Image 1 (cartoon, one colour):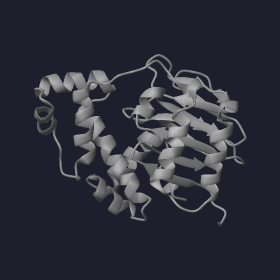
Image 2: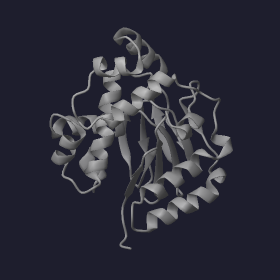
Image 3: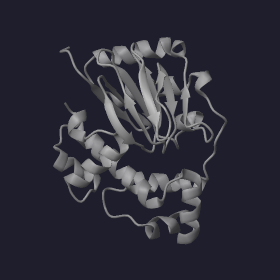
Length: 247
């Protein structure tokens, strides 16, 4: 295997990004994220707070933060969809960021490093790595349940083939009025319907980007109006431009 500076993989429950020398702007996204260092510590800063240093951390969805990593060692970002069973185990409405004991990751970190060194992006292998991370008992938070009608709407949104989708299309399919659906969706997810649809477009575009499509093609596949819209959305979610993540 040729020496690589980063690796990215996806599955139906989330994805992994491994890279180094990361300097991100403030950003937030709709995923529960476990960040694990291969060696050097990294720092995270919340708005209005001082930087804190970590070897491993659990960051909740919709938390705005910036991050700085070392130049030598890699970081693994484990992004898990919060409404999956794996994501619900890690969801915490009380603590935005929690320091984790790097010793708890000895076994799973070896598996992540092996995946990083090998060629290939088998979604099933990536799913198994995410499940291994979410199964570490000390990471678990108090159980959170999401309304079944909102869960059903997630599937409708994610399965949409890029056509314009409105709340008026989805609400009747889960047996709710538009107004009731909007209130319930925001209560359960912390996002408006429109924001979640934008998130779903971003995920589809990211899949397309790493299947060797150009940014313009990826924007079209995800349902964005143009490449600049995809670029802005990506930077808002990850703190870096998509072109930077591909270098």
